[in-house]
Image (cartoon, rainbow, N blue to C red; front, top):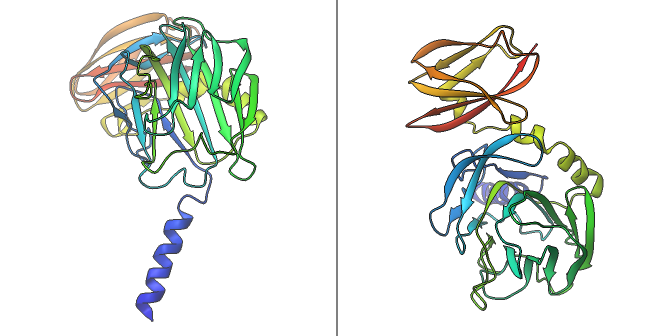
Length: 309
């Protein structure tokens, strides 16, 4: 009887694990890991590259650059999206918007249905095409798709604009039995409806979001990307005080270089950090928000938000 009760308890806990609303956040700080390490890392279909890029929202941020045909894969072996309700938010750019370019594939690249760009329009093939053209070559944009498992209604957003909605009564826009989402790579049937580009953010949630929430997410996108950082950075380096006065202290376990950026992405100060406690002089900088980018050979790049009073 005790074993049965124990099994039932374990089963209940495993089912309850994803009963709560949760979001997996991928923000590409030189890694494909979820930023809080509570979810599987994204899997690259071929080697990409990281770079520091100016975004359209007034900040600079690390991005992951993918080549044509080189997508990213989210493997949902734990059943995070098993309910059929979800929200997927992306902030990315496509190098070419001519023709169809696949953004999200739901069925292991077996069939056409999925999210696309089509000559600048937002498409959920083959049920929805936006009236307006949104995309432009090489321009970062925020796109969100949210689905309700009960009604099977799917709603799409571009930046802070409602792009449209549809009903997914045939379950085309949920994962198949392989339980994978594939980003920026076309299905095997056509295999040419894809392009190179870069992505700064992929957020995957296990619940439907309303328009007000998603509008808020877009409005606060610069702040969100500025403050979220890879969790392990805190174990390797400390930045204090924050808010700061005339100097910022940086404590590091090994040497690294730094670049201090203002909120427009302009580099205003560079230098090197030694092992131990260091100071970065900011007394000549006006009050405001700054991004301190630290890079070393072992742990890559870490970005810290610094508020000068």
